[in-house]
Length: 114
Image (cartoon, rainbow, N blue to C red):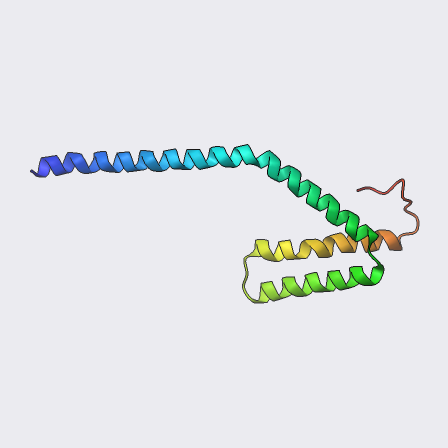
């Protein structure tokens, strides 16, 4: 009776591992299929945010930068994961770049790099 249990248990474990691998492969296939769409929508959102930042007044941009830095600082002090802290700093980076370009009078509209 112990021989039956000794051979049945590894077979069950192997079957469960195969099911898990099949499930992971299915999810990976779905993620891969949706990746180009996600990249496109992310690029569109970034372009729209960039357009809005460039159209904003200096005072508005300064408030957005301060809020972004404050939010990121709170996340950092609260022990949030680093990726969230960095994500909270993205608006401050966009705003800072826009403000620096506005302050630099030597850069013209036609020579600015996006």
